[in-house]
Amino acid sequence: MSGNSDIERRTIPLALRANEDTRKIRGHAIVFDAKSVNLGGFREIIRPEAVDRTIREALDVRAYVDHDSSKIIGRTRAGTLMLRKESRGLFVEIDPPNTTAGNDILESIRRGDVSGMSFGFRVLEEDWRDEEGEPVRDVLDMVISEVSIVTNPAYPQTDVAVAMRSLERFQATGMSTDLAQKLHKTRLAR
Image 1 (cartoon, helix red, strand yellow):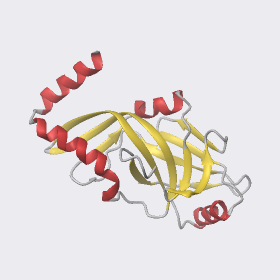
Image 2: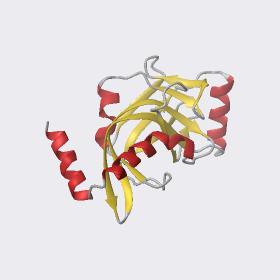
Image 3: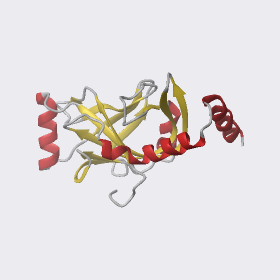
């Protein structure tokens, strides 16, 4: 992941559950149709259709602790990470390994010390608009590369660089929101 500058990360403070009997970790890595906090000059909304490609194409998604690939705790291709689209968002179920990383994160979730999830993704289709003088990006299609259990639910500025470049392109057009929406609809109709 470190070599791909198009990967963005978003962190969501959500309630995770760790099942005592089965060692499963469950939660929503993505919440649909909810406006994010300010991500450095814009807000973002993940639309439900944005996760369809990842699920439809059964992409190989990994589960990490704190976005650290050395702390892998699940993977879709291995059957240890399950993704399911629900009305609320992207639900994940992780079957963590009996490793230091797996055991430590299970214990931290059970104690309530860790309660956030995050995801890494690359945007394939987006729509920008102004809403009450604030830029808002609707993510319509993306490739999800990873979900993470995170200890610090925040939106680190360094993880929004790709979105900032997209925002700058939108702002540079000088188009009104109405014109930008018409162009976007035309692009979708092709």
